[in-house]
Image (cartoon, rainbow, N blue to C red; front, side, top):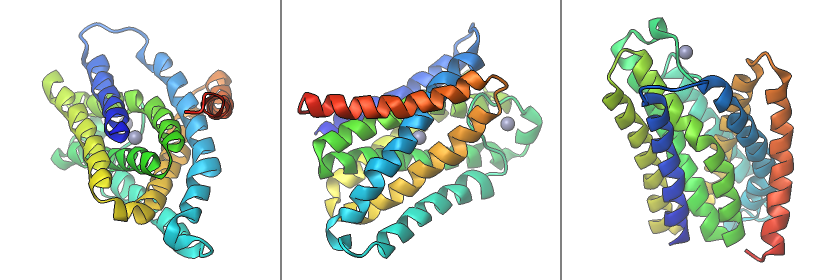
Length: 248
Ligand SMILES: [Zn+2]
Ligand SMILES: [Zn+2]
């Protein structure tokens, strides 16, 4: 039940990101967006290395056999490389402004589809986290939530930049939210798949943090955004300690 509630909140952030970018009058989108993006990247990286990977290796069929789950981690990483950047010819996080790169009809939907696939694994990670251990679920929810608003924002801005309507842009961010929920629900129903789905989602999460979010932060000319990545790692540490202290 917790998995559905928290997964639903993460999905809602996608919708809000879509509403934000499609709102008629808006100020300073880009600079406002780079901080949650950087905070999310640091938090996600810490969560992947310190919690998701060790937990994946310790799941029931894998204990003492690290190769199969690590192959799944690599597969998850490459899956997103394939769908966000090979099948989709143009995708990057943040506000999309390259109308010329989106001229082909399928370019936009390939990019939206790539994000939807990664969002599906956002949902898988949250739900699998809750089924393994409640605290792990809460940590993963926070880690993933931090990039959900920029994610909805990114998808809606891709659709807008291609010259489509605000309505279409909002629908695209809603579709990504639905993909997240599908991930949550599938794992909640098919718990036997968790030992496979969780390491796969670890690879996806690693990709999102290190190969989607970090490059976007590094394009910024201010080093302040990069500094926020380290704050994200510190925030992870504090969050973990707090969850522990409150016995959550
Ligand atoms: Zn672009
Ligand atoms: Zn995501």
